[in-house]
Image (tube, rainbow, N blue to C red):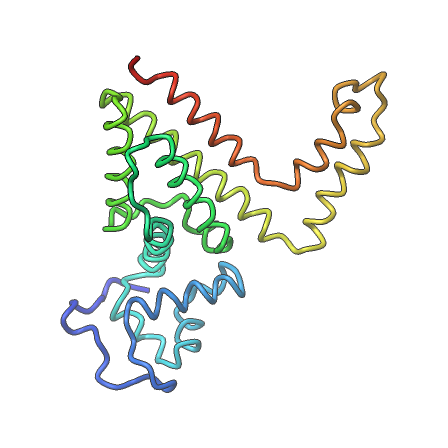
Length: 232
């Protein structure tokens, strides 16, 4: 795709697509999310989008300058969905926990898109609102600005890193997921206490816990660390 996007007032099609719908940025983004969920990253092409929309692929250029521009729109959509309905309570720990879990849940609901978008910075409305909200929680908790910024960075990177990691796992074929989990019940369960006493003592717990995301525990540890840095 090339840089020939049409100005905002001229973007809307005068006629419906073959499927009877009128193109819009939202329709294109939602269709792209669906295609990526069904077919992976390779589905994010102008040709596939045009086919799914029942429109000439070149019409996508009226809304997005490039596939990267569309990818940023997908990232922005996920950020917006994670924030939808969130309101601060005034309890910094509860507020941060809710924000982190919302990010993680939203990206888990769209694992293929998360792999494409979790590491991108959009600089758009939803992302700006999220940055403002998280910094607000930290500053109102009493953290000085340099500390608030460092913790903001760590908090967001932790949430997105776990979202991307868990999305990669969920994106594996079911057989591969099952095989990875079976390793804990097979290879690790056979290790002898004489050579691997700590694994042998905990292997049933390991086998059970490795089926779950480590993010909730990591988030709790992060919140404990923030609490230790707050002014007395």
